[in-house]
Image (cartoon, rainbow, N blue to C red; front, side, top):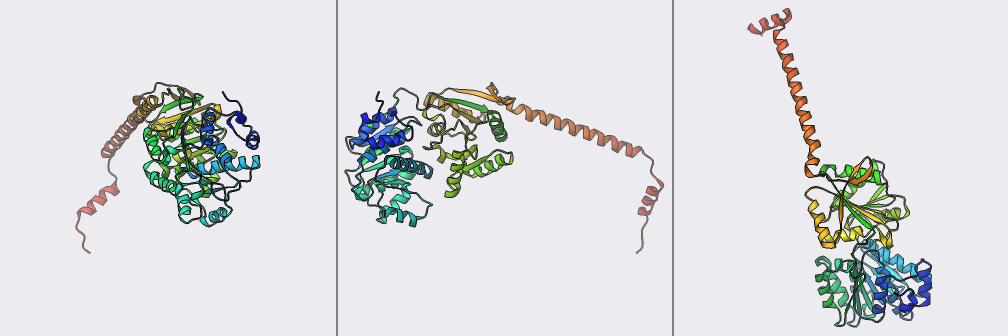
Length: 439
């Protein structure tokens, strides 16, 4: 095992920059990928979440950048703006701490394009951002694609999905054939590998860290709670009240429900904010900053928050909606228990959704334990579908019984009214109604 970055060929300046962040020992994926990227070969890398994949490509890229060349030498593509911002901050911090004469630019959609064009006039060596906006600026000739030495596809499995594949290909085709292509993710399917190989050179290599180890860190526990659909939000409140996490991420499948869920949590005194694709850039940035700084304790997110986000101190992941794709579960779970820390994933599922739990167990070799919240504590449970309907049946029986009692009371009242003698005023009124009136 290599215990020093120097043995991987990393410069003293970059090592100093790493030490400023208390990073001294390379992880498994870093040990395997850094030499390959430094050699200039195309690389496909796979490693568990939270294993240091970002530095596995950033360090060798910074080593290969020539300060004498004024122009973009590396492009890093990400599937979400949040991940792009995170990689940009890491690159800036590393460059500053190492004292390197290099620049980097964050290029994402929804941001002001004129400001980005002004930033590109400074000729940054690294351009980090989203596919669509970078492709737009290349076509406008604001990014000099012919100078690019390396293109990185961070969370490459998402970038090579049908919705993104054509745009990624278009970016790659604007560069020279000699350029290097690097792809990383915690999940690399056969389809992803085949599509990547179409764009890579013949000597491309596949690097996998932790061979034989689970893709989800072993320090993460996996529990599920059975609940009726209408009881899910109540169960979420019980979990948050009982577990009292300092930082928890709640995942939903439907982005349209995120604002509603955030409003409900805030109404009940829980500090929460949400991020999803349709939210404004400033709102998403504010929510993430507040979550990182501890001003809120719960982040409600769509799957854009499941890709690559590295937020220290996240201990709980709660799936209010469970994903049908096992890969999405893998990436959601990876937001906690990072860098060897402990974490727990709690999925609140209906009896119908429990089938996906069994699917995850088969796909990733995970062990799920059924739990329930009892007196504010997460305890083992054997609750079944029938148990969920008992309260509803009890309420129905109670309602019917009360209805029958009301009917009996009403019937008794009517019978008493019939037996009661009529007053003289009522008799006179009836007599008057029986006579014809002339108007």
